[in-house]
Length: 442
Image 1 (tube, one colour):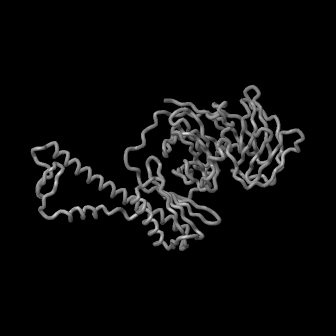
Image 2: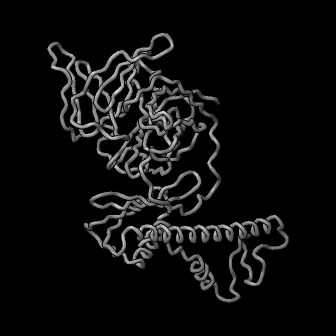
Image 3: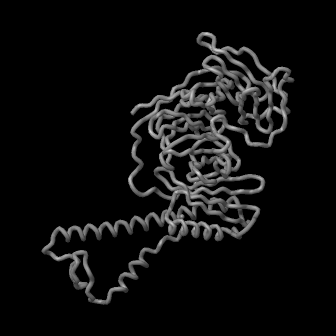
């Protein structure tokens, strides 16, 4: 499920009339100008000669197109200007009269002129509201990002304080040009109920088609498929220090001769060699691993405080999507900085392989909180655009975990098309595990 998003919410625009004025001043009164027909004509004459009706029509069309383009650019500029100011007003409500530093990121991308104007309008409005913008280190830092989805440009501001980070989002204008084309395929999500329990489930691993392990806050439980029903066959206590709160993360790692259970702030290890002393737990300050995300894929990425991650291949490149505690999902490619931001997803994500579209898709949760029923939807990423390619699948409670249940290997290709979702049923209070699969229609 999502973290919190504090709200939704660009610059004095490019003065189009200035360029028109310069053009007019460059023409002496009654001087000859060169028309698109290639002949000098009087300023009082039509730009095209009557004898060439086709060229005249073309000239009128070009003139109309130019005028329309100017009008559209002016309208877009006005929209960005107002969006920047609305965004600044929302931000100023959280930082009244304080000194801030600003960092601007253009992930849309806007043109250089549009982005500069957006930045100027945002800072101007912020200063009008009493904020003091200074370079260097300050107690409050604003990271202002311009992002886009297929239909809208969005301004996203992270208000970074030492004690917390707050996020403000504002739609700032429609994306020009034709709407995103409908995908040539669709996916259908399928759900199979596995088992449920009263105790929290942080992770599920399927050892094979008939055996599963679940990680709880203080125990690992074992299930076996007997006939058509999964039965609890045993459990092992974890001597960790404190049980975690609802919404905490967990991960089971299976090595060759050892196992590890990561629970927020702790790691418990078990040697599988003869003479093992059982589970041992200790404090852990390292990042929790993700079953299908290689360590080198995360290395060097500026991900901040993150919740979930998914790695996939598309267009011959390895890509990474990371959800963060500020409620945003970020797409990474080769560099350290994100190349796109998605604001409307929940915090739990997983990558699956369907063979349709780009091959890989993301399963993402909804953006509600822990008191609301949830949903999971398949998302296809082409380039840096994300597009839904399945109907949402509803769940009877918040999805608290969405993981790949197998280790992915070349010999286990089918594992790439499956995921396990765990929800907390709002009516029964029990934690329920489901196996998710996908089918593709072209």
